[in-house]
Length: 468
Image (cartoon, helix red, strand yellow):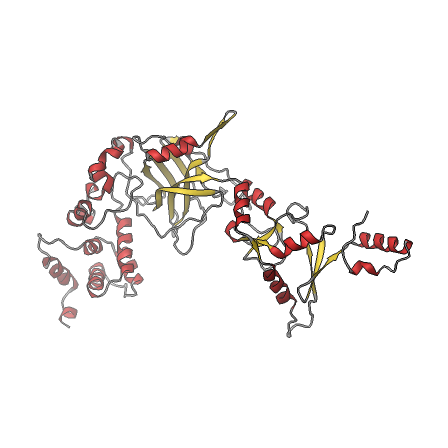
């Protein structure tokens, strides 16, 4: 009751006095004290508290929030807001996470904050630059521009798995593209170093064919939106420009604009930067990224060591998963042909083609995605080969997403293709059974042949005829 009658700034002063110099404020309280009005409002709104009032009132509410009951989620939000407020200058490499709570670097971070609440650069050096292993990145500071910064690592940001690339290692974990200014055009720098094993993996994968030099083990640069709700697709920031070790990086060409006046966009996909990377364990690699800031959107960047795979390997892996039990498809047929009491029209049969909608050739390995609701299959070999050239992973039948990990080989269609060798279309019945379908031309030819041989022409219902 007494606290309600005392001015807010007095409460803050009392709060500070309660921590003598020998016992500095806890880190989370230091962070809160350094936040601006807009950031305090975001924090209070996130915690479900009243976010209206002047700065000292908002600060009082935030400090009371910490003292009363502060969940881990709120602590994470405080750190996120603080890191945006103070992207501290530092030397960066693949270890961007802060050391453990008892490490000298963390103690320096908590006890030796610089002016305005921002920790000093030395207090935020990664563990590998503070400990005995400092020699691992000797000379790193001489190769980095002065704008190299520490960016918040977001382990909750996940990029979608790419079927044609097996990830071997994370060289830079998903990290925010952030800058310490409010300008529209942003620029920031990252750095990473390779281990002897990684250098060996890349070097030994080199394939020289003609004048071109390719690596099956690659250093891959990826961008995405800073969203944590689900694994993210590759997504380039607007007006992206990348330099690796001072050399411009080639980005995918712009797509043709869909409408007049609309700014052209690049197809978002991973960037192979292997040819620009220094294959050295002593000299680090730097990546300078520039882009245009967008209101309400933030981006993350990551660098991975990956091994490229071929369509042949992906087909082998799909086969290794096995063939789906035919009963699954029979159940789907019965479900589709079950009479709907609310419908005046009843579907009694389904016609399905045995030709692939992609190549218009007879199916060899019939597959579809688990997420597809149709029975029609497409050929696995052709589908994977097409996505190797231009990865879209869209079902050619229903135009919905059909990612590689959701593909199945349909056991019922495998049976049909092995049984019915000379027709390209079948009809499914209500009980799940099927019968071959013939074109009008084939029916006429069969009828003529039957008439000439004195037959009654009823054999057409019993099976497939080879014509011609």
